[in-house]
Amino acid sequence: MRIAVLDDSQNIGEMLQQYLELEGHTVVVYYSPSKFLVNIIEPTTVSTPFDLMIVDLFLSEGMSGGAVIQQVRNIFPDLPAILISADSTWEIEAARRGSPPVRVLRKPFSMATLLAMIRELKGE
Image 1: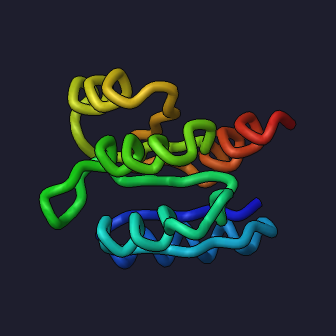
Image 2: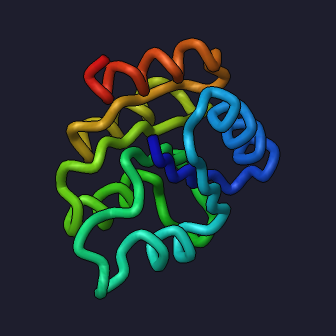
């Protein structure tokens, strides 16, 4: 599976990339919402270069993960998304309601939980 990860924490991005690649996935990590959007939403692209996006809820550059997912879904409405966050449950739930359908994982989460969610999204 081709997975795009957007998290402004380099440690989290690298950890997710290493773990998911060990599981056989192709992973590209972005640390900037604007670079992520430029690389995902290209005018010459007919289909998304990814099968899944994992996006942190609160990002730099004044943009939320929910807003990023909405922008991507304006072009690719069926692209599965997992929203990750260490914030409070009510903030996560508000974000989930704002960008349905999206799966949500609260940090810290286990890699086994993330992999199970990915398998579920793949229909396995």
